[in-house]
Image (cartoon, rainbow, N blue to C red):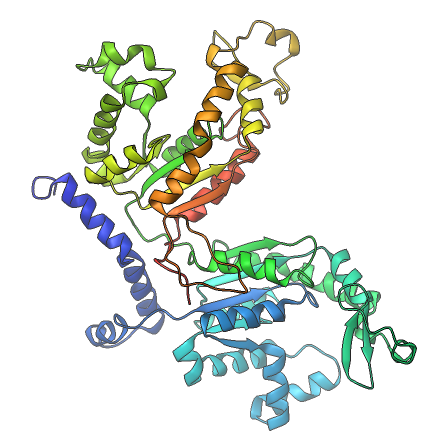
Length: 515
């Protein structure tokens, strides 16, 4: 293949496929064919290729957590149909449909409606014309592992499954402060939305029986019993959102986070060409994350330091000029570093396997030079870490001169004693003065990259915008490098950051958010 197509053309083809989501399109069509098993495959493809992918979103949350408001807002944002299982049951019973007649005795006795009835109602609703045209946001299903299996058997395979995690005490506290006015049928909350200061109103307010703490905690216990099974059924498709303060009173912030995630689309294992720039302040942990990505996925790890080491080991023309800059690659002659990096990124293994470019570019001019030479990343990841945390990581790390192992003095592994640490060294570039100088130089780096590549963000949820979205994504790496030594599989915090980076890379980022 490389004899027929140049590296530049291969990168252009890969960029086109990623920009137009061809890999996701192929994955979507193949999965639909496996589910629907059309007799005429050619006609099936003709009918489905032009169709835009409509939203299919399922929201799972603890009972009485306030998810309905969020589901309604998501549906409005995407122009989708908000489907509530409780509303489907109520309408079916009122209209005395076949399923409604079957469900009524269970509802009257306060018993759980059998899964076959629930799944029948939902499946029928998903086939209605408005849902087929606009998509859906489904609330209230699944509640059990059996329902989750039932959804899969019936071909209900949502693109996004959102799980809200809210402490039981937060839900109980909110519900215990709810008061109902039987005269006006208004609901008040003593803290968030208090009733008017009127003795007559206050006197007639009541608490609803189903909001009492014993009943709510019993419902929550049942929910917690079933949620592990639901997670197991949809492993790899669920995205957890943890809101310690709950949804009530925080709807705007909750919706903003959820819409930000939905704008990324779901994770996909469809093949794609990963061309990723990994950046952050010195000491943010980008080398650790880049190495982990290389180990797991085989992406080629490229950086100024690795380019210098390669030039030296291969006895290149500039080996001796670059040798003094092995540990301070950012100070190496810019023109030489750019040439080495571009040459490396255009090599056949980078084109075939994808690449992670760590710590470069460091200026807009360098980014422009990469672009002019045909180097087009499809992701830019910024590992967000406060400068003072980076300063602590670097100034407090020590190296074993015999083994090369590195540790943080505030987070010593159990097998390294303080006495042993006396023989370990601190490198000159880790002195406080040198680290602060590098951090000050990098202070504007994030904004420069954002301006050039465009940051993937979302407007305030209350004021959605159709503004174009870039390819730069910010990920919290506050704890990378701390814990049990630095980096690697033994560092739980590095693993957490890696999972966030990994999840972002497995999702396509649309050109713009829904308007």
